[in-house]
Image 1 (cartoon, rainbow, N blue to C red):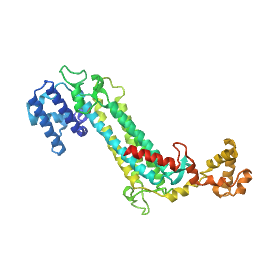
Image 2: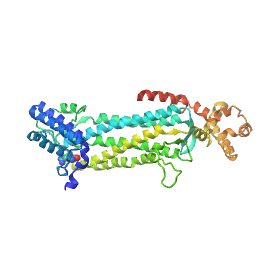
Image 3: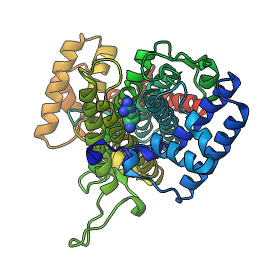
Image 4: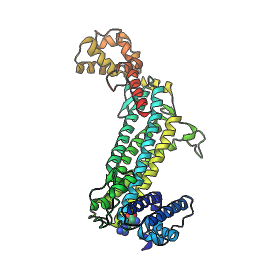
Length: 442
Ligand code: ARG
């Protein structure tokens, strides 16, 4: 029973939150005249002593005492004696654990927020350095149109910005205090829930005691926002794995963020990127696990809910690790400008520019222009050359109105410079976005 029942092995991570909650509760009990001021002061000092014992690694955790709440309370009895028994007046472990866990998750939301903004800053720096470096843009992982390195980096900034906004949004919604809901029904003691809520940095007390002790939405919102963020990290990691290969050579990862092979001396492996790519597995796994634990639970508290913590702890640890590793990799990596540019010109990447020219200059309907361009691509393919390598005679053999001016739009630099529409890849537009984000992230 002890083995299946105890949670102290993992919920000791909430010791600081548990002690903060108890301190707020004790001060409130005294302010309301429910316990006397002398006892409250003894509790305050005792709890601070216990906190320093835990922080100093001197605290003896006991499995027989089941969880962090009872471990702290039992120790308080040893430290201050009889008054310790009055601390649990008007509360229950049910509102206590909900409060502790919310405080823990709230700290994580703030840490993830900070981790995301650090990563975004690193991406903005990359974008600024290479705002006008051309590279192939892909759809279906087939060369589509040239884009700029800066634009590609800024795409991730937008993705991580949405992650941040999800995290902040979750924080706003979760910031209601369960403490004082007691076991499930509230309490007959004249407690002041506004006071404890305020002391713990919550916006207000949770309005329904049944809901307050049975709600784990805040943990699920954290896990779902973490899952989407981990998915973004995974996509970016995948690009780094591809880009750092000998076939692509788009980026060089630093030695600090790569490893060697034990048998192949030439290898430099993108292990950090691969591990980040994989972290989504456990983070999304945690999301599925907790959703499944919560599904079908009747109100209010059930011990099933003790299964919430390890999932959230593991997801949070690994998300923070992935964010830090990605930030380090992005800061350290160097984009190979020449390789990017050489690749940008392959795969007939300016075929759309050619079709657009036929529309703009010759007034052709786009569908006809698409057809003419297709013939020119086929011709270049047959001659094993790129579009700009075709002669004017070649071009005119497909459509006699084509003039020499067409070659202006076939170069990759002109191509990206022409994509000036809002949100487009033109260096001018990229620099505007870089400036906007630099200000927002300052
Ligand atoms: N260790 C428990 C948990 O994590 C604390 C709450 C226990 N409540 C109870 N009624 N047994 O959920």
